[in-house]
Length: 565
Image (cartoon, rainbow, N blue to C red; front, side, top):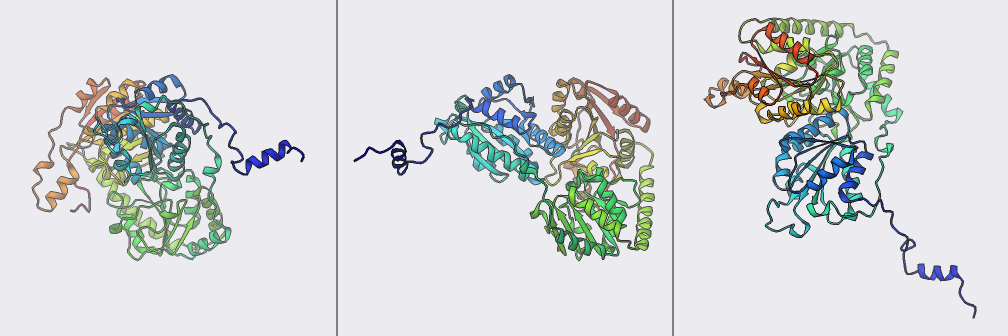
């Protein structure tokens, strides 16, 4: 009998063992913390926001020595999470926040909830107690996955260093592609353990545009073209296609209303623009929506039922399929990237010469009456300043290229109603509407877009939630402008309670001296009680180069139209 050949011996062995069993796994030689940083950098992450704590000390040390990613230390995890959310909203990239075990995670839940509610991609990395103490009564131990699971689409605890490459890639895809919250908890003693595996580079296929079939696009346009009184509702999904959004509206002869985050995508002085939608929007938008025979929703999910007709015929176009048809009936839905769809729709509309002169005349009539009413509101004089007047002065002072972060409160409604947007990018806590959003968002915006002026507008009730982060802005040398609207109350709540005949005494605020707090934090503090003083304060603030400025404005307790319980 002849001896088996080497090949035959190998084939016999492979009958019982996997083909690649003896091949060594690729190994970058990184520790857990170093692997995380390399993976984040490969995906374009430039900043990590966070708060130092017992369970993340070695990770923070490695961020400092890594050199590719900036660590931005905050004073509170909620503010750090809101900053990460704001960066993701502004840039479209993943926002990253880190914290320690126990209260480190629970403190950041409010910020993560904002990301969850607005479908924003944020990755939270939290330390955990030592692996040998997980599940015990160790200090600061909680079941992190159980705590964060209502908000995070993906939440896992690292049980072995070699699982990190796959877990981290899953988190990045979840946040970066799906626009969701992901979370990874890491036992504190595991950050310095070695990982077997290599970094997964970002692949452009993850953001290839979603293009609908031509037949579906043509059928959708046929429905749009048949409308005699169309209205376009533009939302955040239109970002990156502003010129085409204007061209489509003009070719169609449609009235245009926008969601608050999309105020910059359509010129506010355009003859077809009829303001925002909802309580903080315009009466003109509601009137024309009620009279329209077709509403085309592009990249928006905002559909407030009290300000939209219940029997509206709706065509909706969105890159996220599951957004289509939420909260309203649907004539036609079209899934696709609006940056590619809107140019095609505008060309189609331009090629069809439809006579909508009567509808455009009606738009002009309703818009004209609305603008006349608005100008009268904003022309109010006296002390304290009317909130409408404050927003008019603010709109004139904020540079067109600026980013402006708006907090939640009575001022938010006046801002959306009266702020004439000249291209400023607006950041807002959309559906969660959390207090304290504006200041952390402004800090993140200035870091992400250092060449753009950045302003924040907050009410006296909300600003205190994150006000000490003004010290963070001062330490970083960020010349942001924070306008605090001081009307001495939780105004929305106060107005609603009084209109309903309820005791509103607990809605009244005993405010500190906000300007002096700003000075104590290392920035500038100013007060403005008149038109002239507010203009001068804004001019000086936007001329500042390396320190933040807080401007406290005394504002009359006016009631927003349509306010009710």
